[in-house]
Image (cartoon, rainbow, N blue to C red):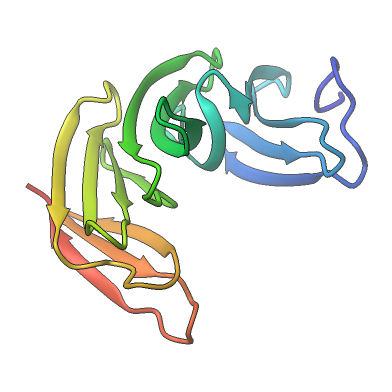
Amino acid sequence: MPVDARRGVAADANVRVMSADPAVVSVADQDGGMRATLAFGSDGRLQSRIDDVGDHGSISEAVVEGGRLFTIASYEGGQGGSWERVVAFDLASGRELWREDVGNGTSGVDVLNVTDGRVTTVRTDWKYGDTLYVFDAATGDEDDDRAFRDHVVGYAGKLGDVLTHQDLVVAVRGSEGGGRPFSVYERW
């Protein structure tokens, strides 16, 4: 069965397996064709398709957890510039479940973690400091929104990862400059 019967997928497209159960793949056609996340049912048939670009914005990061796709999507804000939001989709139907804005035109929201029913991300901003966001994975209700004076990332580079353990959030800097410094925060 083809990955997408409506539109063909180029042989040189990047396909990344995001989950085995449920079966979910991300497809990015290098020639500007299909960019989407596809979920398949237990019978191997296409169950839903979530385009990387749509009303929700342009998806840059995605995590599969509990039958849902949690994403970071950027969009053009009312004052210009790129803004970020966390968007959750149902993999069975492809329907958007909730969205919450987390970044403005000067911030970077690059990674997210979905564990124990919580969606966690950190907005980095070299000028104003960093902000921790935690949302309820089922409803999108905000569990935590705190600003920090220090900079998780420092003045150069992006956030490499956000890890969680119980009520701790570990923000790890990317590998620029050789080291991988990290900061640990406690969720409320």
